Image (tube, rainbow, N blue to C red; front, side, top):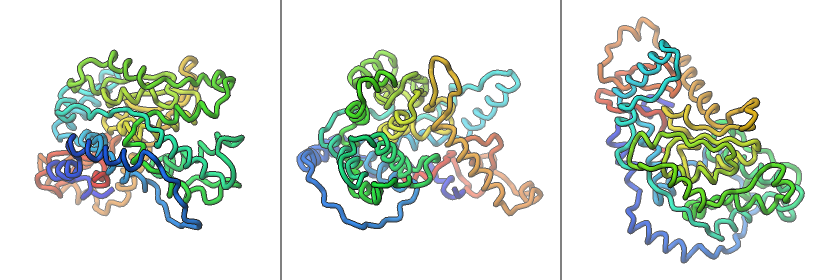
Length: 395
């Protein structure tokens, strides 16, 4: 990522992010229009032999733009990635002091107060839509060339669908388009024509929690311990757990779910907190949760860099604690560390030249999220924030 992208000023950045976010009245009108035109889905005629060169992350800008029109969750995520220079210095000192005192580092209160937006987390309303579930079934049915997806190969088709979506969202562990097994030739282009993120975002719901029991026998559910929690129960538990929604400290409390499944317990919790850790013994269920976090709870899927150690999805048994493995935060850490290493290797200035360059005291600290010795730059004369991503992708 270039330094120019990292040094976007706070003022212009937030102006761009707020530009397409609708007020409540406009959103309500848009919702009514969408409901009247799209609740009854017409079967779409697919274009045969369609060719598109899909790159990793190709779906993410569409997701961000649709969300900006409806909920503003990705906008809020973007604001949380910006940290004032003074707060960043304090965060570095806290890490150094924790090493001396031989303890785990914490996030200082003043860092939380200076970095998190004053406005509370944008709330998302969960509302089931038969049309959205129908769209998912149609998409899954399009993976095999013949027959229904709800057969012997159902779990294989679900895995392909999840991997295809995570590739489209640009997750660092899914940088290759999933291979099409025999009998599924052309599945990617059929999904490209059928998957409609707007339906899922207009009507947020734990759709995978509704779909998977249809292909699970009672014995399989019992063996896996997969019994989806209704969202109405999840919402009630979230309200009982988190009290002061306006408190910035409350927003970084960790919500831990030892049997996360498809994420039903954590989805409503994302209205209250930016940090969650979910664990499960089934990788497919964890992928379902990760996909739905991208849709509805971006800070759980794409961790806020300074809260990354407080957010994750873990594969492993919560009771025995044997060999737990991160399937999310680990890959973001690895990606950001490698990017910082590559940027360092490409630098052309010698150490002596760098040492002679005058650096303003107000210089922005641009760093990879896990770089303990960030580089300072004087190329921006009036920086006020640190940002780690190209947030223009979300406008």
